[in-house]
Image (cartoon, rainbow, N blue to C red; front, side):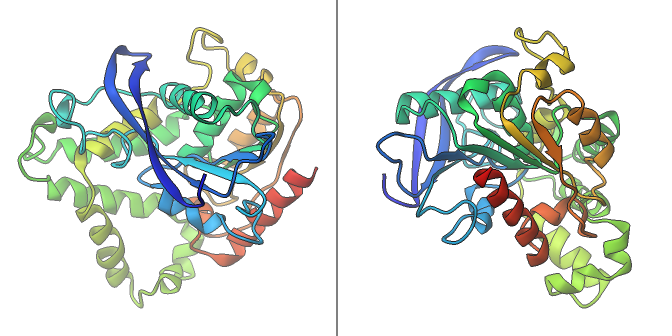
Length: 337
């Protein structure tokens, strides 16, 4: 398959929470060439609000995810505006009628893509950041025979209650805008979306980052310029229903919430046989290092490597070169091990 090719995998999406979503489109992009043995594949799922484009900073010659050596698949998560989402699905399943989709549902569809479209039996690596890490965890628990190496950056196998506080605040901000109308709106609820951006600003980066005026590295001289030029501008372009869909998925992230593990997180983590690297950031406000330490106790073959950064959760977003290089070197070591 040609490098950088965007394709769709369309089938009815079986869901944990109800009837299938008909003609669900899993949009993905590939980088590199799958070898004859189908042994050089890497899966790199997307994160909250991100598309395959936001994963590309980690992909390239000389990087751990080198398309000259590996065949990298980046599947877009449902709800992100590229794969089937409230914003691009026709009625009656579009907009406020879009069904709830879990991490489990996403991973099962990705599994169908990998096996039916490419005949992949085992990935050299499954890697993800944030919600991408949630998908990576689910992959390794459900299909341990298919995941050789696992890397989870700034993400947990189950959403914590403190993390849920943040997510519920985003949803409440949108719902408080009278224009939202339970998702059946004519115009985007811009007041609610602006509030979402302002809430996000307090969580994505650390207190130390703000103290160091880290926004200057993003091209903003003052705090006010940063808030309006970055967060207001970003969420002005977002779709409220897409945010509601993705936050629902994030809130309900739990790799043990299926018939295989019946809510037993220890069993779900214990089922992972991949050589695993957990990479929390020391200043992440969503996913604390203590959460990863708890997970580490149940994993068969894993180590924890903390990202030493003041960039908080965004240390994995490609905005700070030193963080990107730290992560890349860790992935190279994992792949070589």
